Image 1 (cartoon, rainbow, N blue to C red):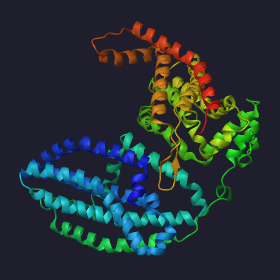
Image 2 (image 1 turned 90 degrees about the vertical axis):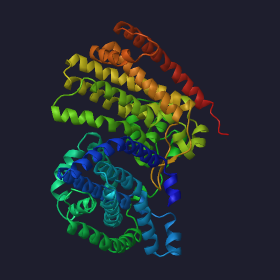
Image 3 (image 1 turned 180 degrees about the horizontal axis):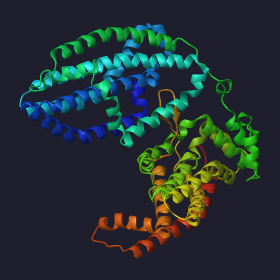
Image 4 (image 1 turned 45 degrees about the horizontal axis):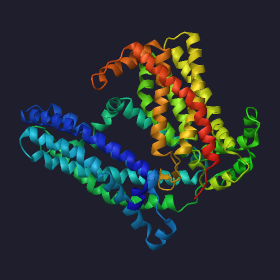
Length: 541
């Protein structure tokens, strides 16, 4: 299990980012807790309700994480057939429960430990640490022994239902978007307020009593503290037994799958021969044939689209920036106004996502099919054409509609909105060609573990970085040259931050933007030639 955790590059990176965010707020939490401790020591028990609410909220958080762990990859076993032959299910299930509890230990102990240390510092006595640590331990044990078996039971229910198995990816997306919507769009306080009747009532309120029972001036109930300890002691063995039963329910079943998911698509052979054979998608080939007559190009484009449909995790890396759009969407819904930068964001994201989705690693994405593709009748030009076509065909119209609609909603005139839509088409197409050149120059073939049993091959770090810079420069240059508001915003951001005492006027910014635009426009045909040549001359060592 430890090896599995270490192998999951994407989630480890997200955990590291989460840890940095927690570390950043620890000094603030310590200062606030210190003030509360001083207030409690003075005889004012007002902060006690806030501390109790935070402890109860922590319990709900660990409960939710336990459910997610049980439903997800942390409810799975490495080499399950061998493992369940060597050890009984109760040992394996108990080990997984313990592993998940230990995995969340730092995320509970560190913030609560710092908080109760602040209370102790403010109160001038170490006594708050005793109740705080007892409550933290009770919180982790009780929440995980409830949440993890629930997650395993849900996993078993999904595996036994073909309908739920089909909906699982969609449900996962909904849960992920809801989580980031709450966290990034500032809805967490509102959610806690909505749950406050439950969080402030027993039995969750008893955890607050346990946390504050040793804090002077808090007025915590000793009966509630004893009840919290008693429930935790009772929940532990019951939770372990429930985990064993739920694990058997989840593991000893045949997962329901659709017939077309049980066989791998013949995408590689289709691309290599220049025919559109994957999943029998003749309609897709006919649609692509309307804009391109070369069979090799159509075959590569169809294969790329089918691969994206069959392996949507590959698109995960292109969806990450959408998280930063959640506050903008929330603000627009709350105020009824769309910010002036929204059409430029839609254009930038459309170009960036189209490039990252396939062209930015057009060689590495082929995987085991790369030798067949390189030795097929499809030329390097057709490979580049097909890869670019596969992302431009769906992404460019969407980016144009979103950019134009955002421009109109932000108060711009209809002709200006049409201009935004037309510019988005050009930017997405040109950006995809640049991405193909960058991706062909810096390919990546080794995948990363997104979950325990699923891998994806993202573009290389060099390709990611270089293309992101080019996309931002291109859209920013277009914005400075065509949009007065955008021009003033960029100038206000850049002018005060220039190094070495440099100064930049608005007119100077326009000249710089014009130079960048000219260079990037000239770079598109050059990038096309380089991409075609790189694919045509590529050899596998």
